[in-house]
Image (cartoon, rainbow, N blue to C red; front, side, top):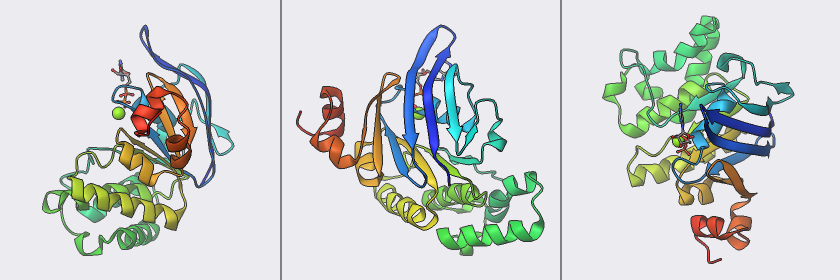
Length: 238
Ligand code: ADP
Ligand code: MG
């Protein structure tokens, strides 16, 4: 677990300013939901935290380390994407073990971690299957399993549920929250879905056109939206 500290972070793609200066403090073990309309910069911010995108200005700190110039593998984070990006030719167990093997983790530790993650996620019966033999929800669990086995300080989720049908989405929200109760790993969860934000977050960060409009608990945002955008987006009367 770790705190994440973001100071004056900006991102430009060529001449286009996409993130205009973001300050954000996430505490150790917190579940923060980053919400905002499509194109407002959520994925870009998350990708900068992950190290998948360079930072144009400012600093990002994970724990007590400034990570601006560290490659993704050295940031002690694990990211879960919308398209699970499982390896089709590998079993569930191998999909989960892959990142650990890349890091030259010894076989006994790899096996322990895979078994533990499979246990937590209810995947034990499926370890020998291939992704094509799984349902959408099971594939999403494998994607989470790949993140869990690495035992990272921070989980980053980028709209992990948007490809699932409505019923499964509700179920997975609960599962992800239960996972967080259990592991207490600092989590940044990106979504454009207000309901997802309201039901899952310790604190919500509302983004709009590359800036943060407001940060607060779901109740604070609902009761005291700072402006019409937040009010309209969170769905309370202004
Ligand atoms: P969100 O995840 O909130 O939908 P993104 O972070 O994906 O938003 O995108 C924010 C803005 O940055 C959009 O206008 C998008 O077109 C632009 N953008 C994202 N990635 C790139 C890139 N690699 N090159 C140029 N523009 C980009
Ligand atoms: Mg996005």
